[in-house]
Image (cartoon, rainbow, N blue to C red; front, top):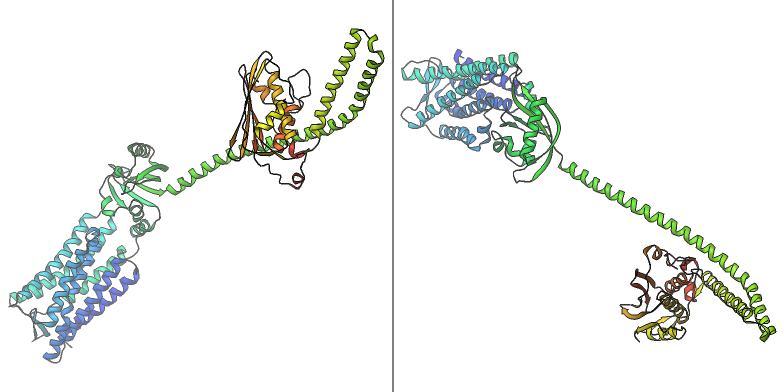
Length: 621
């Protein structure tokens, strides 16, 4: 085995070792993966060179030279590694870049394997077999230009990165990588480019000297942490995966760096944001100027709530926290901000606020209703107690009233014509007082006892006619009857007549000089409506509030049970009674009755309305 074949074998071993070592330093890092593939292909290239150099015969040498035709892929990964190392992100995001890198490698490899347009075959030299270039073929020269062009481009990128980067560690890494790239490049240029043209026979050493690249890479790994997880790499990965959006701008507001979260939030592409003004992100100019003023004044800003716009123009609410970035000299160089999407949180806060306000209103309303219900229950209990006492007192008072009535009657009969006018007047006064007291007792008993309804068919017209026959209407009062014969209703006629009598007498009392009482009836769906309209003195709002309250009256005589009993009777029929009045113009009472009274409870089916269910819930005299 000659020394040059041994050098190729050593280069193959060194390449595969360094490639494997670099890959295991950080298996997830793209740069490590690219260098590993580069090293594996380089190892394969060096091994095929070793095999054809120490071949026993020409045919074997030609076979290994054909298998050596995959070397263009080494150049493809060579330039790919340079692009990744020098952080040419925009080029790497373009699919055309990969086509320009690997398409020529595929084409030249296929041509080398299937034709003799690049290599003419093997030739025996003092260092063993070597390949002979097909110099008469234009494909051979294009292949040579592509090889050296790619190699020089990779070196140019690394040297340019060395001068561009401001990171000291990155600059040192770029220096040793550039030196490692330049040695095999110039070795290949001298031994495989220049020497053959000058007819100088020396072995090709480009593959062998590529192993020197491993020495420089190894030094960069040991000294400057090339291919390992640096703080910059860690920061870059943290920024990439952080859930909140990150933005880095210069002092003029031009976006320099944005992470994927911000891109997703605003629905832009990264290239559409980087280099553009951050002003375009704000929904309103005042937010941007106010935030920038606070940030530059205080140097730091926390949880500033503002509105941003997405690419589609949709407004989103965000919370911005940021600080002014400074260099080593303490000069402001930019702004770093973290943005958190709070749109959903704000929506929930607004809903919670609205619900809270509604809940307060609801609680206030329910509290008011509960208070009114409680007052109503207390009032009902009080009125029930009054009704019970009234019933007992009424029965007890009738006996002495009967005695007084009888005594007055006896005196009238006994004295007869012997009584003078004043004595007759006194007995008449006693008689009227007893009758008045008896009416009060009847009202007490009527109010306290249970109401039994004896339903019968009648018409609005017949009901009013029967009522008017019971009343002596003064000549000063004009009654206008506009009631109808339809519809036929079922009602307790005697009790409804009592209601009508009470309303008509109250109207007459309200018109002391003269006036008109208009009575109308009309059908409303399943009900019939009676309206009593007088032209009397009217009732004030204070009195109307108590108008249906038992024991409330504005008259000199009476106990205030008339309208309270009317209300109970109407409600016992399943109807309602309302009042409207204007002082000085008159009063209107409206009674609404169902056409067919419905008795639902067991007591009602027997014609009995329990006292508790008939206690008044409104007010008047």
